[in-house]
Image (cartoon, rainbow, N blue to C red; front, top):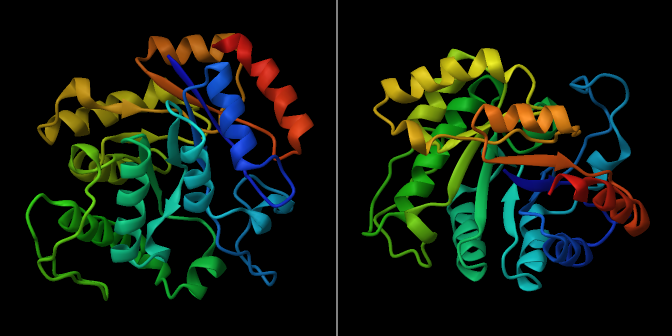
Length: 276
C-alpha cells in the first residue's frame, strides 16, 4: 500500500520545496494539498470538526502554485489536491492549470475534488450553496470537454460554456485520476460512479460498512470493479488501521502531517517512516 501525505502548507510552515524533497528521498508516494482561498472572519458556518477554526485555514498556500514547486524538485512523487473546490473556479482556467501541472510533472497529478463546507467562502465566489454539487458536476464536464482529444464544445448550465477549442496540453490518459471527497451516501456514490475514478474519504472511518454500497453503485454504472480507487485521506495512522485499509483493498492511504515548521514536520516524517 502506497503511503502519501497531506498538510496545510502556509506561510508559517515548512516550504513546498523542502517538504517535497524530503518526501521523495524518504520513499513516500505522494503529497496532497488542500485549498481555501480565504476565510471570512464573520462566519456562521461551524467548523466540521468542532471548536474554533484552526489558524492554518486562513493562511493556506495556493495548492497549484505549491504543487508546481514540488513537481520541479522531484521526479517520482505523486502530486494531488485534497481537495479542489471546483465550484469556486473558472473551469476553463482550472482545466488549463491542471493540464499544465500534469504535463510538466510527467503525469503525476491526482485531482481530488470536493464540494466545500464553508458557506461564507463559497458565497464570495458567487456560489449558490444549494446548487454547489450540481455546479461542480457541470464544471467537471466542461473541463473534460477541454481535455478531449478532439475539439469539443460544452454547453454548461451554470454560467460557463465552451466552444469547440484547441486546448493543449492534455493530461496524461486523457484526464488526471479524479477522486471525489465527501461523506458516504447513495448520492455521492452515484456521482463517483458516473464521473470519477474513486473516493477520497476523510479520515477513512466506517469503510467496512460503506464500501459495499460504493462498489454496488460502481458496478451498476458498468464500471470495472478493478478500476475503483478508494484512498483514505487525512489519516492519523497506527499499524492496525493501515492493515485494515490494506485488507479492504486500498492501494494508497494519505497521512495527515502537522502544519508546523520544518523541525516539526520532519519529526512527523521520521515517525511515519515506519509505515513505509
